Length: 134
Image (cartoon, one colour):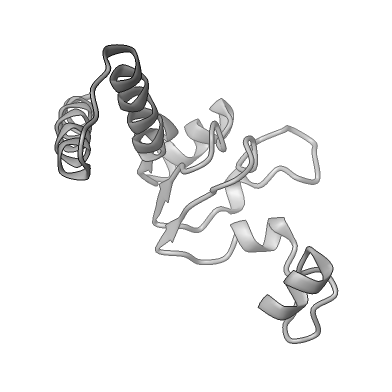
């Protein structure tokens, strides 16, 4: 697949596997479903053939994409008892590290990797604790 992808700049057409459509992929039985690229993929777009919130079978959802679950789908999944780690927590580490880089640049600092990881852990732990209280 890597060779095919490098030669064709995509995996479409690769004959070593089967293509799976997005709806089927999202509605498989997963322990953890992690939408990672597009927003709005878990939705309840009343009367839309892409409406899939009722069909989600995952035990947990980690929103690694920005806003992958629409508000109506959130309500449906909450009623089904599916815990969702929201995008603001799940994908915020990269945003925080970008902020740290900005701070270093404007203040003329240069943190080593250990300092960056320590700061990231502090912010993520604090934010996660707030989420757990809610």
